[in-house]
Image (cartoon, rainbow, N blue to C red; front, side, top):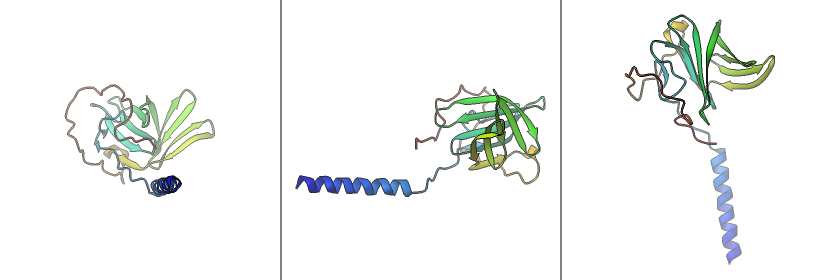
Length: 167
């Protein structure tokens, strides 16, 4: 009798695991407003304005236009909250950042990390917003789910981005 019980428990566990792995991931886009993602490093603080911001399965990024006219990349790896804030260069509809020999290229389609001509990561944009200064065809930012009227500086980097789940 105990063998049948363990067999049944094993069969149920296997079926549950198969069902969980075959279900599509329904991850909602992070909360956002016109400055970028709420409670994220991928957000432009006043007086900068968001030119674009987007998220991939593992990253969130924002390109901010500074009052000086220069651009800034603000990126975060979702699983552990690792951040990168660097000057960015505009080239057509893309922005590039050099981080110690690794080039980050942000477009409405993807975030690409490359070392020279070797692509290290090619992450598809799952959520993308372009600000009014980036030209026609820009998608409007999502409505804010939390009011963000404070002029305080951005908080320190988060240990992990809000909304991340280990997978």
